[in-house]
Length: 321
Image (cartoon, rainbow, N blue to C red):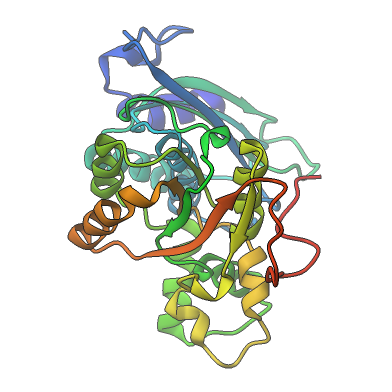
């Protein structure tokens, strides 16, 4: 299939928002609110997902990792541009599954495809090259101000919502490094490709303006927590035993330690920095939406002497080399 076959057959039919102009122009025509958040992220075959992943799996993961960036910055995902480089290894079934999943996101979450770019090496390309899927996501600001990483305040508590570690189990199972019972394997693989995104809960939290800063957990909860502290010029003390691990992580027939799970990426849950006086309201909203939460850290001045600070090793998470 060539580029036009894929665009006309699978992408143009789902690009129904009027700003997309039917994918007929080089630009989308989008009236923007005063404050619009913009984020870009990519998935590369063999780096961010296994080569045998389906169209549905890639589409779910692609939009998930981009949507959590917008939520963590204080906004609601709304529109995206999609750029693809596909050397030719995908056929009709793949693109049907891929476009069907994008369309489901539009119906369920009102996240609309506006345009992008498609590049293919063609069917005659004999050298295997990695497919690449790039998204630029746009979303209007919901909170009073953007939740910048540098905005955590002295004395703030660090909270994570959602469950940690399930996606790492899913990836290890996909790579054949561990073996899980069928039902557990299905759940773990879903955690990797389609992590839980608590849409109504995130919107409620952002409308209440409870938090000073936030970040999504992409490269490991330990590393991303440290990034939040470093960006804010603060010292972070954490009690790692308080982290809510996914029940998948209790499976006994594996060699994966708690420390490994704290350094593993791909959870795409959120970390929030907020003052003590807002914790009760935050916990109430979590309970209302049945979202797991754990208060596990606090921010201090850089020169604070914290005794018995627990560690999880030298390497805190995944570093993009």
